[in-house]
Picture 1 (cartoon, each protein chain N blue to C red):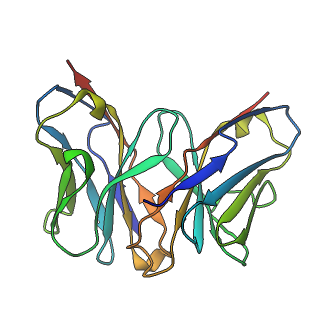
Picture 2: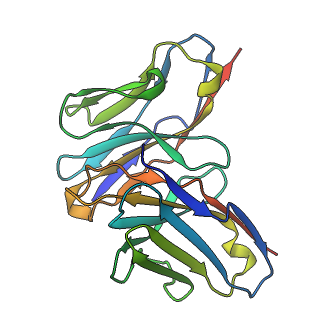
Length: 118
Length: 114
């Protein structure tokens, strides 16, 4: 089956620093990747949709200058949390989808990255 | 607009008992529906999906779900619960009008008692 990896799996950083999270599709080409944020005991909140070679589309209320997304290749998307603050601490999950009829393809999820900002 | 409602944030069953997790959806176009399972500190794993083929969809680990358009439901069932089924379950809906984005329900925590 399709595999999506995320790195790092967990990261602790100081307030004010930037953190980069990588999302890779290991055995397929992902034309679209999604970035989600999940708070404890809550559902996934879509942050942005990332298409290879173009700018990411951010959901309402998500600061694009704070959460920088780059989708430079068909197998790699990165999320950079800039000037991180304690309220950015969360579980970040990416998913990758192949090209095709929008909606019907399966999203393959990464294992998530736990970010703790001190 | 699309939305998903999962009835019951917590469901507890005994090992060997029937599992029923409820999901109702709202979509302005024919939906694609998914069930995912999430174990602690992990990503989501696809259990099954409905994409307008058979209304009864069989997934992994013995789970299945039935799409009922008249009831706008897509409930997840498993005849006999196993201890390893204890996890968080999410129902999701996507449609062609929303760039393939998924909307997730709030999740249901399944507890399996020995």
